[in-house]
Figure 1 (tube, chains in turn blue, brown, red, purple):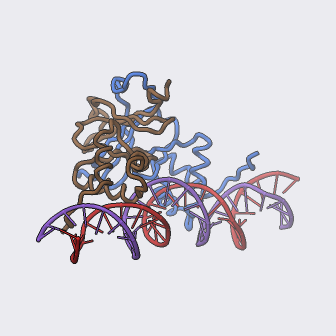
Figure 2 (cartoon, helix red, strand yellow; figure 1 turned 60 degrees about the horizontal axis):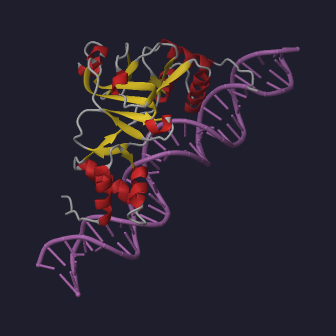
Figure 3 (cartoon, helix red, strand yellow; figure 1 turned 90 degrees about the vertical axis):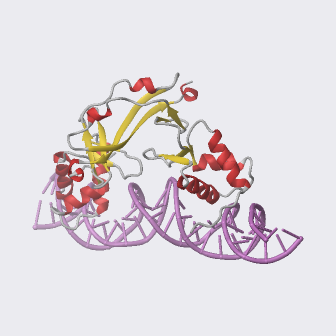
Length: 126
Length: 126
DNA sequence: GTGATAATGATAAGTTATTATCAATAACCT
DNA sequence: AGGTTATTGATAATAACTTATCATTATCAC
């Protein structure tokens, strides 16, 4: 069975950053942000913490083609994402689209879908 | 400047398979299909041919998160894709969705978008 | 046909992201 | 506080693709 888990400064910091973040973060972003508070934080620790939180259902991963996954807290409700082509950050979009099924060929069965918009975020569109 | 390009059996085969294919193909799929006709075909040759065709604007790449890119002939018109979770093949979907912009936060500028459906293709849904 | 050289195939090397290893450190129970 | 052991950080090792290298082969202009 799984070993009893211990509370550490590193994990607390990482969890808090993710909890507070209004957008999904990559491991690299998370490492950078947490390093400001927890000096010398190892990248492996970030991977371990993120993996455990996904495993525990506290985090969900946001997969975007050609990009490393981002992570955001679970239970935000169905939504999609925007990837800024300049600053490389990913943002949440509110809501979804109807009629996705109308795209579907006969006999195909959909289990999930992803909609990603690419462009410039507000900051980069300046 | 670029060296004059020569016509080879390998490139002809690859171009023809892509031209005839009704769905986007990965380098691996393309290599497998072309190897039946051109024995001993090297994977590097496939990468080189695909790269050149993309460069020339004859092919477009189809990027799907967590998957190697697929390639399809350019100029098919705007459409999206379906990724079968069982057989791992990618299919074209006809048309698009309206009102993508309604998802957009203020001041964000969209340049392109991707819609990918995941599920089982007709063959796998059986 | 012949020569110059682009293309090929086999494979080494490079990328990028992630996981494994392991000695040192720090949590937590009594 | 002290001991057990989970966790950490540094880094080696993987993994999955893609590109580079280079001797050999094949294309094409003449």
